[in-house]
Amino acid sequence: MGLALAEFRLPRGLRPVLGGGRRPRGLSGRVRTDPRRGPEPPAAHGAQTVLPTMASGDESPIFEDDKSPPDSLVKMTDLVAVWDVALSDGVHKIEFEHGTTSGKRVVYVDGKEEIRKEWMFKLVGKETFCVGAAKTKATINIDAVSGFAYEYTLEINGKSLKKYMENRSKTTNTWVLHLDGEDLRVVLEKDTMDVWCNGKKMETAGEFVDDGTETHFSVGNHDCYIKAVSSGKRREGIIHTLIVDNREIPEILE
Image 1 (cartoon, rainbow, N blue to C red):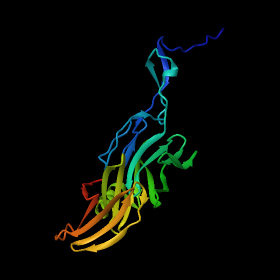
Image 2: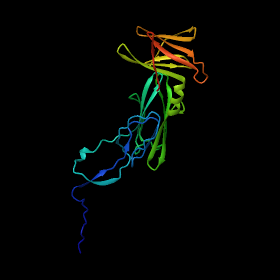
Image 3: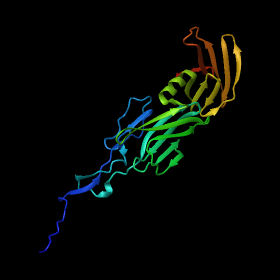
Image 4: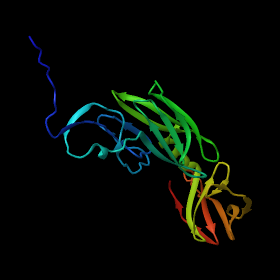
């Protein structure tokens, strides 16, 4: 008695593909991803534009009625979060790649690779590195939320990004102006009275005046100074004003 061999064939027009979730290209603060369902954008401080890309997490086979060639599949990436961090020497971009199948972790600061780890068996944990001219300490925390969902949070000097920026707004003043065809960002650190301009720490000279103090410095051929006067109110404290070529520059909030 002969044996009949059964052969399994897919219906015409169906082909197997790999399903993937979506992940955010850029969020500031807390980022949560689920390779099966995609990101859950949080209400985080200073959120950036989200550009979704294919994730490499879920590889459950599904069938799809699609006549397009296999080469048209979207290229996958492990980029899960992007943060913009404003420090005295400028705004720095931090990017983080996390492979949820390989455990790969890669950290970029301003496009430069700072950390690369391949084939990490432990998918949760933290990565610590330095940012900016002052070597500010930064830490990315990787936490599992549920199932295949992960949450990524950034800490600066031991504080959450939101807390750090709130505290920074109390200890610094920032001005942006256009001078000699160039955009300038001037930052005053009120606790040290250090002045930064476009990432460079300026040489300053302080002097007392009738109603307060003035911190003088130069940008090119332009005379600049930051005047500090008392507001007369306990809660407001000292008011700092930037003067460039006898013109007052409005302060911005970061």
